[in-house]
Image 1 (cartoon, rainbow, N blue to C red):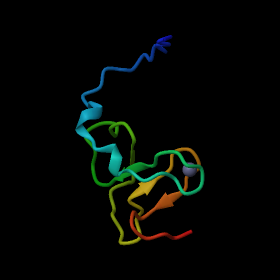
Image 2 (image 1 turned 180 degrees about the horizontal axis):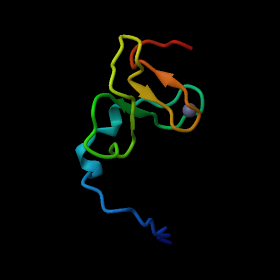
Image 3 (image 1 turned 30 degrees about the horizontal axis):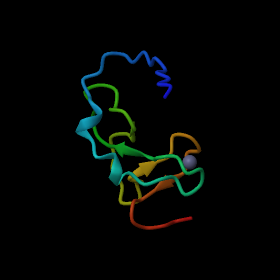
Image 4 (image 1 turned 90 degrees about the vertical axis):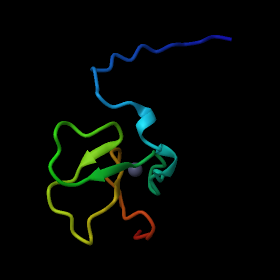
Length: 81
Ligand SMILES: [Zn+2]
């Protein structure tokens, strides 16, 4: 058993992965990576891990999830590809 511990130097963050249920995050239909939730509104700081800032305005068309790898977007339930 080799435990290859890649040392990730992560900046001190006030967020912990336990705060989020990533199991509800969809995978990107295009590249298969886990998508990030788009957060709208004023943010007190940088968005938490696997979240992206979507701006202040939330439109009905605003995507709920966005892929940080290929910029594919998803509205959660509805497939729009
Ligand atoms: Zn993608």
